[in-house]
Length: 539
Image 1: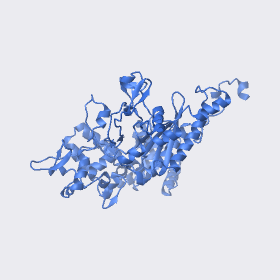
Image 2: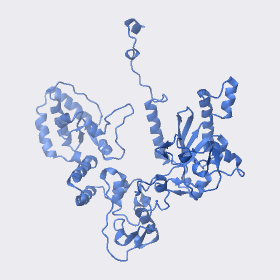
Image 3: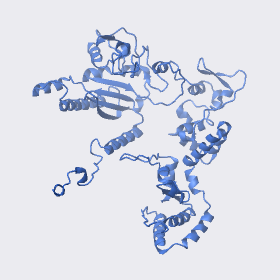
């Protein structure tokens, strides 16, 4: 009433702003919290194994029964009824997956609900299977996932369910105006190719069995065969009378580089039978078969073995010599860099896991394995990196590499590499010049650091009152004691006034465009994370 009397009709000018808590469905912090929960589950359960898409069927009898009860037509406008029935069906689907175990024992599951453009809800579901069900065989995949039309005579229920819910298109030449078509090609890569058996592409994802069985369905005036079938589980689509797409997830372990011509279709590239065999993966196979091959590192392997590109196999070298090298990996590329480092030392590896197994202990990351092998205890890795790059890199590339190492790889050593005797002399001179107010702040801050109180201080004063002089005195005091101090500023000019100062955005990896969901890009176990753990004071 007071606002109305004052004439404040704009509600944005009345009251105070309230940030909705993360428990409120749909707000940015709610989404961020759910994402973090999902990532925590992934850290515990590992990578997901199955991906399901469950779409609402507006012709479900429960929906029609309720519409008849209230005297309404099924025109899609009764979204409250559709959503309520879909929620009930989704609950029963999740219970069925957990208790009836059509895919085996499930240790965890995650799902999210979205709405199509026409308003129908659908759920994306991730299933995490028990460890005994990881890396299934192609025969097991064929039992739980199908991409073929059942025979009408042998399985009429399955045939009708696939016909009604699991057929894509028609698209392509049969229907160039299908919504999935873009620049004359289907964005979902239909029609697929006939395939006599299930196999895997270079990324580890399955190419499902699609035999030419001559079974067809008629849809929108066109006859469609197995090339248009969306992968499914027969019992699920029959039981729930809806579209339930089932896909196998796979870890991209190899991250192999492949070469293909630009006029090729991605589908044809991925369906090449030997695409998963590379020089690197076949090194594993050679080590499994030949005992003397296990005496060589991957970098030394070409000196005694020759790669046969036709058969995609390593064969013993009969004559000639070879100059060896491994593809360069940038220090900022993370695990790829550390794996490459290990390949210069480890021998006889038969899998990716064996590369990071040191003295019988399998480490979680290649970086941990490097530390266990003593490759990352000092500057050896960086000296070797620079020495190797100096052979082929340009001057500009070497400078960029050197700066990268300084920024990302040497932060702790850099913050401890000071002339402590000189800093003690600087501190003694500066401390004697502090006024009473500066000494009060100095004593409080140093006491907090020495007692590990973790207090927060704010020093206020106009230009020329000696704030920067106070900071420099404190910095020289703590750094002379081998303590780490991180001086930062909001601008580059201000940062230059502090010894070894950096901008806050650079030091703490703060995003330039900050939103309510923004976080500093500091990964656990990184050089910066370890530096912050050892830091005594941030200015």
